[in-house]
Image (cartoon, rainbow, N blue to C red):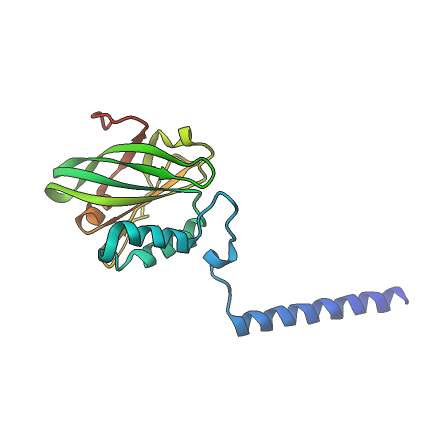
Length: 201
């Protein structure tokens, strides 16, 4: 086959393949981020996180699925999550303390405590439950440090609030319900520790 005919045949084949891919996408719809990403042995799927959240928060978590979906669309699949309880006290400025358990697929479960200052319009004291999605965690000790808030990352729907905290490598996404959702939006940073401490700084 002459070089010109061979090049033409390759171009026609490429065009036909492109047309077929476009037609397939239009008929089946573009895959969502959560479905396009397949979990490796260390990561959690969106359904696993939603199931864990519903079991933890109970029937009050109407907006949980939408908030989790938003987190998965932006950050992909987490390789860990924390379930815990926290208490907050505030009069414009305040403090948040919490404790829970880190869940991972490859290194089991580990205790975690968190503390942090808050600033907002809430006052008084209240307790709530919190779920935190953890991304890019290379090892359990990498979780025990201070995580700062990402500007403009607050997302609240149907009484469930999500914020994003990072140390530039590991990303932690706290999800709270009710008053905790509003207060969670006001948290500037959280310090996660292996042992409980009163010092939030």
